Image 1 (cartoon, rainbow, N blue to C red):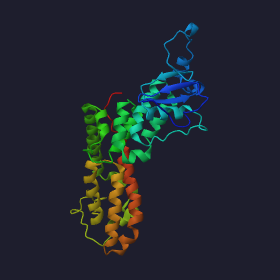
Image 2: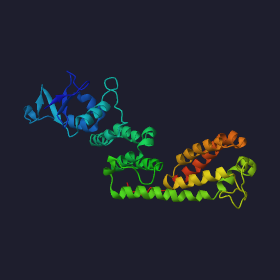
Image 3: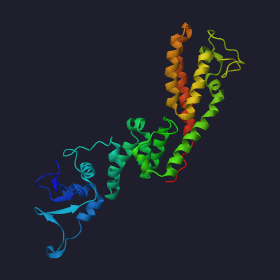
Image 4: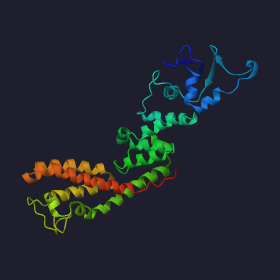
Length: 307
């Protein structure tokens, strides 16, 4: 059963009909299609058969062109083709729509739509919650920048990711490459256990004297994270151990910041007024330094994947 599309694709003065794979008819203007798409510009400018001798399907005096896209994809595609005064660009925050729209954009030579889809796949709002889905869609479409960006964001999650439907879009080799990348990042970060980077940043104990509060014992031989050969405060050592353990599974700067928030709460609940009063400010500064070092090291690790 054929049905008519909704506004603005039901205009009485339209001069061509596009029929979707599921039978929805879009009454559109050739001018908009030709201006937006080189594919349609070429197709619609082809000379007609002499004397009207053609097997072209007609309806209400308009040529009917059947396309392989379903009505949902075609609707989104056409909204990008139309002027914004007639049709707003569709939202691409629903990842389910990204791949078919991208395929249509490539098929009909619409570079603008392809760029829009690519931008959606690296939208921080989407990447924060759906990095694996973005990775799978980007990899399937062979989008290098988007694939690498999404892979970086998966580092915020555990090594073994939760299942998602889009995982079927990639091969076992692709998934193995992602897991290997994740593991390589975790291993690379262990270099930060050498605390020289902290000493280089603060230059002397005076630059981070909050790490040497006298409220707890901190003999150098007992401290797992000494600085300048002197033991550091116990709660900070526990924080560092927690972070390094978490980085094995989630090698990301966000992992550092999450552990920091937890530590601040624990220290404030303890009895030392000195630590409690300055822990938020000092740990915020330190965690930013730590997270930056994590991101720098992760950025040097390559996702081994052909494009």
